[in-house]
Image 1: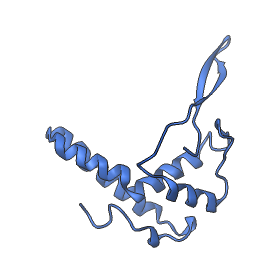
Image 2: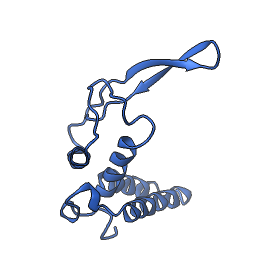
Image 3: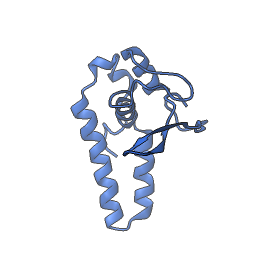
Image 4: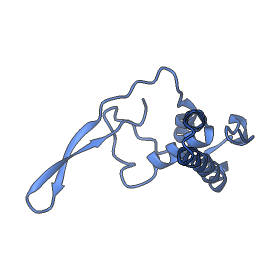
Length: 128
């Protein structure tokens, strides 16, 4: 395991101080190691690396960033919560944890499809 795979929480005090290039590079490095282990059919190694990735602080930061920026970031889920401020994003990233997580139901909305029909769209909640 690399020294930076699970960056310390103290290394980033604010959302603005995050070096996104480094975060993306570290997550990509772990993902590449997982892909290589799959190609080599080393399933125990895959399992260990996946566990490292899901617990990585960098992965949590990147996941929070992807959820809070983008096309649907201003649409609240079932919980009605939107993380607009940088402080809320940082608290959200720090609050992600492995144990005690229970998925919340999606908010179902029907959006127009083509000329005549509608299709269901599931909007996830921000906070578990």
